[in-house]
Image 1: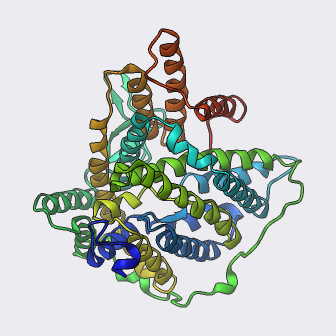
Image 2: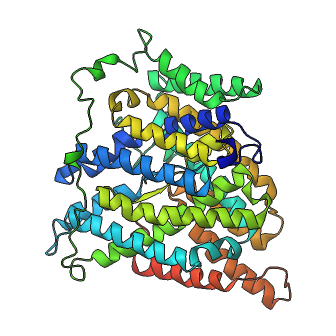
Length: 462
């Protein structure tokens, strides 16, 4: 096992890798509950079938990432992309050409084929060379803040107000202006336990204890059973079916009819665009955090192979009956726990396969436990900010826009898009003014026009 995964070469060991894999699983296991609720809402797909597809897709393709790429990244149906899938189908019901769930899955399948072609022709891999190092580090930092926002929001430590009204009906106003993001309701067990989780993980990390994030998740889950806190209960295990009914899978449930008349091509284009940047950002960000880009050629080769597995996973996930399967930003939690090889991914994938039989147990992990872990991961990923020269405005401004727009628009692709456009524009102006140190790769020009066209004709949603 050590020889196959090159553990000594990567400076790790079996115990660390398995612990890292468990940590990654713990931080992304929520998708097993969330995906069925999104894709199974309002008469879309069968929730149980979506659960099966989610666990199988995450398990199969995460294991494939570990075995064929030796890379500590996990894959699962992507948040945001599953919401886009659901809203596209739901919104189309009021039109003359409604999109059925089967058509939506067909769109996802097609986008996966497009990714496979782009990967085989090396176009996706060229992105690694084309995008400046400052933007790569900015992507890492932006994803770190994005993950932190997810953790804060899921825990209740942070709430978002629409027109000044929060989800719990409270009206918030600050200095005469309606506040959008503010502190949540602290009189809440979930919030208390998230703060406790932050304290536990932070202390363990200060003490340099390996597996601090995983131990923190487990300790918070155990604390959740304490009477008076009651955020975890064994009552949810009663009456559960522990044997997966694979015959309920929506396998190969595609409808390619009316592809040109229902607006499905727009959906295919949006899936392709968002997944292109989301996956690139996640893979590069994770590779940076794991230290693979210390040798740029090695980093490029590994990310290129990872893109191939990711492309297959998109179409493979659609075949199983779920929305776009993508590399998960939560993989950073496993890397932060010491994961450096494919054994981390294999461990995570095995957990997802086991989850088919132990679904009720996997879903016992409370949001406060994973939220604390995600916030800490944000701290770790923010370290890449020191690699960005903000005094050089040609790269500093695009880097800042990349970092700022990811969490503030809650979208990784938006951050990368604005970073690309601003860099090309500023580098072009700098070159005209005689500053030739910032080159513009031809693919950056292609992305420049693709991004502008995307926002001009498709819009900012999705």
